[in-house]
Image (cartoon, rainbow, N blue to C red; front, side):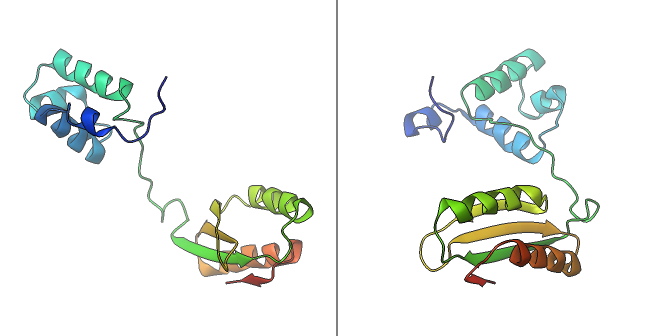
Length: 147
């Protein structure tokens, strides 16, 4: 079974105009009713449903998602934090991973190359909440730099 990544060039060429119209519409309206979509792309309900199923099976549609209102979710502020660490060992890394898992506001953590070791993406309602998280990070682990 092939992993679902971007389609190969010859696979993308197999999409026709209706397939592309279906994909374009679903990208902006993931919860669209098949009947509405079928009418929009001038297909019968069953033909449109079959195409959607094929596009899902072939990996063109990986999932359907909902975009959340960040303000209502109280995560209206996104902060990116660059971390530098002078200790590259498991006795530092394992507690670091546990600490990240214990802070739900940390949405992503990426290891980098160069002067910065990690970058964190943190979603918080406000700067004051970020400051609490910042203090928790520096209290629990030693960093050679954080910005």
